[in-house]
Image (cartoon, rainbow, N blue to C red; front, side):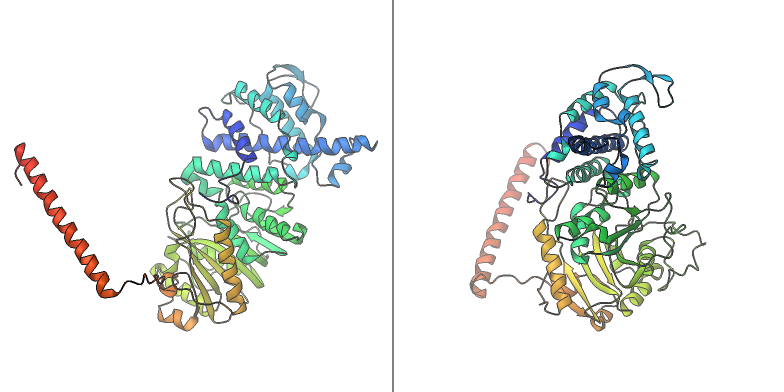
Amino acid sequence: MANGNNTASIGFEQQIWAAADILRGNMDAAEYKHVVLGLIFLKYISDKFEARYQELLEDDDDVEDKDAYAEVSIFYVPPIARWSVIAEWAHKTGKIADENGREEYYDVGGIIDRAMRAIEKENKRLKDILPKNYARSELDKRRLGNVVDLFTNIKMIEHASDTDILGRTYEYCLSKFAELEGKRAGEFFTPSCVVRTLVEVLQPFNGRVYDPCCGSGGMFVQSADFVSHHSGNINNLSVFGQDANPTTRKMALMNLAIHGIEGDLGGYNADTFHNDLHKTLKADFVLANPPFNLSDWNDGSLNDDPRWKYGLPPSGNANFAWLQHMIYHLSPNGRLGMVLANGSLSSQSGGEGDIRRKIVEDDLVEGIIAMPTQLFYTTQIPVSLWFISRNKKQKGKTLFIDARKMGPMVNRRLREMTAEDISRIATTFEAFDEGTLEHVKGYCAAVTTEDIAKQDYILTPGRYVGIEEQEDDGEPFEKKMARLTGELSEMFKRSHELEDEIRKRLGAIGYDI
């Protein structure tokens, strides 16, 4: 099993998931994802608000002064949206006045929807982000009330010394929904260990961080987490991104809000290729997991786009369109880390080989990591991590790492790289940058551009790192061969005996071979 730093083995988050899972019933995972995440968000901001409310009360300050909450980055929760009201209505129905004074019939779902609208009205950052569909008939109100009861007894802010417990819970639930949704989860979720590998190698301490297909915002959250765990200030990061899916974009905005991250995800959802919301951005760090092998991305209208400096990518596969888009958005000293399907390492079709060659010749490829299989809920396609740098420390060289043997299986379908695996990779990159890297057969190698050219600019790490050396067991070759051939002879003899036995048994029931 994975170690304690993995998402597979955390406690409080699992309790929240189990509580929220009561709601599932016959509801599709893609639907109830938003119900659960919205409830978690609502409960947490209510707890944070209540803690600040009590502080102000003790100091005889105005408890309804909205600025007193904003100054400590806490969302103001208006009276009708506070958890005490929601808890009171967990199993009630009846008429009460709505926001405009009109009497309306409410159940717990309607009360939660009313709370979401009121919170959005008071907090402009949350406008049009929160789910407001708890009143719909498909949602079992008895179960919803039971979940409210459970959440009422949970004080989220007391379960961690920092304020990241909801963030961890949110990310954990995202991973669980990804597991339930399978292939569809690729729209919003990148496995945490993959994101952490990108972040630990790039080390985005300060500057502009960009993700052109940001999903639920995991790249931004892990970047901020890296900074805070290295005694930095997340306010030194400026976050930019966009996503084509409107519901996924809302999840990302909630995720950023939960983590106290100010981000610019554009004013709306948009296709990055056809409507780049950050056209003039030059980012210090780009981190992304674009859709693998996306087809039909270009209808011809993008053929003359300035982003294709190294060649027009084939319309049947957007891998090198994503890569060139991100290179285009790099600052003069910018670095890029992205996930790509392994086909991009060697493909020659549609001009991809020429594009890859030009990128290598421009001395942009800092490193390539071949990743283990079964990391993704969404696909079994083998993937690699590409690291691009505008200003490499090791000019004319590229680091290749074969990490395919890393990471234990955490269940029958999923593998997860450990903190030790990720640390080893990050340390290898550091040694490469410092010029102290030693070639480890089967694992890593620093390779010159000339040697890459000899391999026809194919970037598969296995070509360069070689085969891991086997330990010498001390047995002389002649003696070993005599032993092995003896064992093989015994196996052949036994196979003939089994063959004869099978013939006899089949013959006994009238089947001759």
